[in-house]
Image (cartoon, rainbow over all chains, first blue to last red; front, side, top):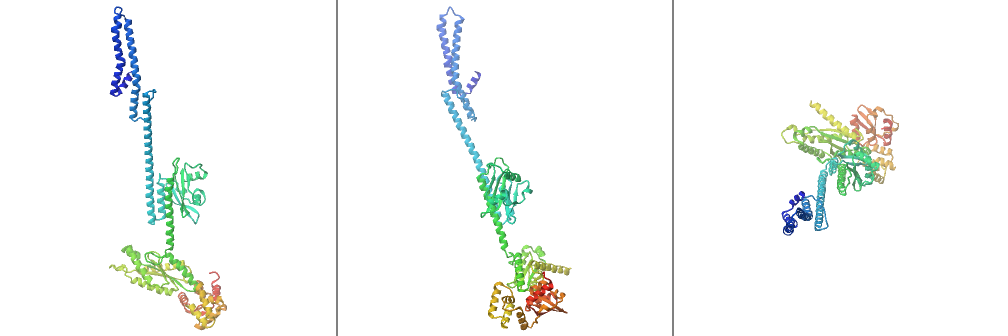
Length: 476
Length: 144
């Protein structure tokens, strides 16, 4: 009962008043009426014979009526009070709390309605939470893509600045690896001479020594991907882990793996492998597409590299001086020697090195040095006929092929060039020592000094060294 | 230039016809090679005829190498490369004078080179290309 009153005290005021009125109407007023009847009609009739039994009887009836009234009031009020408390609890945030339905009356209906309302709120909250999760996921995906995009831009700019293939591939592997949590990633490039896949870049592997070994084309999972040109995936969706897959997992120390061929004009140029150790992981379509963009970038880098190499092969001119380059002149010399042998003619080769060029550069700077080299190159070119070909080999090392000329003629030409160079004023500043450059010349001739370009180049170079040594000796 | 001179010389001396010379020049233009060799290959002239023509025109003495014994030491004065490329061979040395037999005595570059190598004044004899080749093989050995 005390509990009951406690509960009543929690009920809002208006209801408490109404309850008190109901309680009064049901218990106190009948009691008063009873007392009134008893004193006016029952007790006078027993005036003489007033005894304890009659009084007890009246008190008993009164008590019974009171208890009945109270019980009725309680039966009505308690569910309402309970519901009010429950509603308060639910409003306080305890959505898991369900209202207990006691009967099929209006209060029961109210309880049901409240319960279904609570359920709906609960559903809405769950949905909201879901939205939140999804938004988080989307944000994460967007973040990933933004990161990937910035990575792609970086790689693109690296490619366009003509960076080395290794540097580009390193960055590619790094970016793919960091699309998630530092996944082990490796890029292999096909070596067509040996028919192998050679690793160019690898990141986040522990045991790099075994992983650095080249793979054979057509063998193993990676070798097969390079031949069949199809993606290969090991993740939760893989139905059965074969022996080969397990070997791959152990070799790279990963659980899930994605292997993609690097395709260029439908031809495989290499293979990418990236993996992770996450349990029950699945490669999503988006992930695959994103990684594929990186792989395409790798293909572009490879093509670019091949084109640069091809261009270098085709390059015949030395950029600085406009003379030919070493590769071209070696080929020409070889050709001229062959021609000379057939036509029973001589062919001379002349090498020229500047004496104090390094000193000159150290004093006047690289720019001045290059300007001087240009002047020297012009002096050489001016001394030659159209059939002669001049090249710059190294910094200050020049070479000239003189077809149809024997040593005697080559000597005369070399004297002319040496004079022109020594007449050059390469530096206008007052320092006399730096105003002039000195040239040392070595001449070799086919057939006297050999029948191959290599022999002629070696002999001529040796003679330049000898001439320089002789000069040093003289100076000493 | 030498080829042209040689060709004209042979036509002048009626060893070959103008048409034959043109044909040989055409082949030289297409396939390359020395005119003398082409004329011999085509059968328009023999090596001996060419050597004789050079002898009479320029006054170089003709030397049939086949029956000629040469001092090995003299031969070795000229490196094999040079001898083979220019088709010449040293046959005698007297003091500062070196006698050289060559297929084309008009090849001044070759003479200058030999003089440079040997430090001698060169006297030239004419011989046929195949004779010189044979002799080179004989004296320098078959393996280059």
